[in-house]
Amino acid sequence: MLLTPLLVVLAALITPLQDRAPRSVHSVSDLSQEFTFYMDGRFHTQYLKDVGRDVRNWGSLHRLDLSNANLLVLSEGDPHVPYSDASIDHVERYVEDGGTLLLMADGGEAMPPGAAVAARFGARLDVQRAATPARFATAQPADTKLEFRGGRVFEIGLAWTPLVVDAKGEPLLAKRRHGKGWVLLGSRGLFGHQPDAKDPINAAWVTPLLVELAGTKPIDPKRPHQGPFAEHAREIGPLTLEYTDGTQPYADSIAKEYELVRPHLVALTGVEPSAGMITRLLVLPTGGGGFSSGERIAIAAWWGDYPKQRYPMVELIAHEAGHSWVLPHPEPLWNEPIATYLGIQVGKRMGMEDAQRTLDAQLAAGRRHDPDWTKLDPLAPDAPRDLVWGKSYFVFEELERLHGPGALAKYFTTKRALVAKDRPRYTMDDCVAVWSRALGKDLYPWFRSLAFPVESTRSDLGR
Image (cartoon, rainbow, N blue to C red; front, side, top):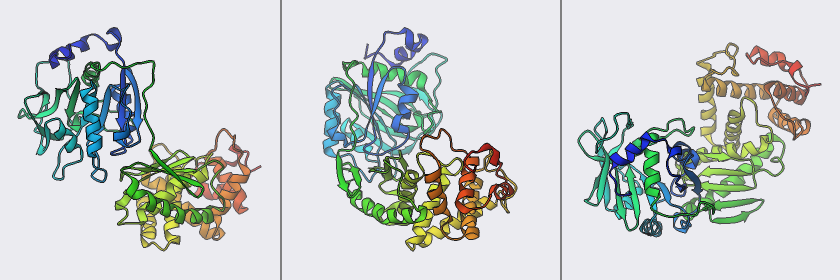
């Protein structure tokens, strides 16, 4: 059955998945070579949620236990963290033992690390852009749709079977046997991209294809497979620093930046982080940002071309750490803007000229929508992003100007004292009540003059 052509695999779509013999897919989506929010659960949501269980690999790839996994999903990776020989050897052994590998990758003028993985299995990524429209390499049911969002072709040998090709017949998706398992190589443009998982393109035929190939390797569906975390962890003061082999070169310098940033955050907010928050710092293999879970902050290892450029990293660390100061009650409108504003202020306190330029640019972008800040409601569902961020910055700056330096610290101090940890909601009406208590003035009229639709009667915090 595993040697059937694509036509047969696609024909199976006539029978809904739930009516077919059940198959279990234990997939691992790798985050160790390049962290993306898409690979952190979204790929599984789009293609595998009804057919199996997915875990994420946060640790170094060559250390990953694949004994009870039958589908490994890899991206092309980031040049900052090349696929090591040990990792490629590990992946090859996994396939030889019956596992299925899906490598989503495109070539380029500078070849991505995933090219080395493809080469191990006899394929070569190319710089040639695909000619549209893409088409299936063999016949398929008339109602089977193929969507391709652009990418590059690749070169394959006789061991490979093309499944999707471009308008010139060059492969965009191909499979091959290797040992007992399968390798599936595809252009990134054949799969979804969005972090909200709202673009499951080609799922109608990708899912059954993955199910068929993954079925080569028996797994125990009753025994959960493992998705390990970053394998290195060490204490740096009150913080646990977490990193992998690939991000180790960045870990120490990022930890030192946090140590410099932290006292400035305390000075700006007037308080320590909320209890139990920011005890871990994870270094992510990406330049694309970070996240905060409150207890753990995760920082992109080469954000803003770090370490060549320092200010973007300082702002990012302060931003993600700042969330641990506002929790357990996120800010109702400006949870993201206030975190970046803290980063800007830390940069200014550290003498970084880019900080003021960043602030000025956002204020100017907001004024293009609302020149005097009095017309547009920032809480409206269709409020432009630049308006929300610019008006938020204006509020913080103006309150500091009108009520003296330290207004922001008074707000955070009052919020920490006034708002119970178990309070179910924290609204913009509550937020203005806290500002009013903190600065000793009824600020509802002032906020309403800036088009904030707030009312004191809707909050009990000012009473």
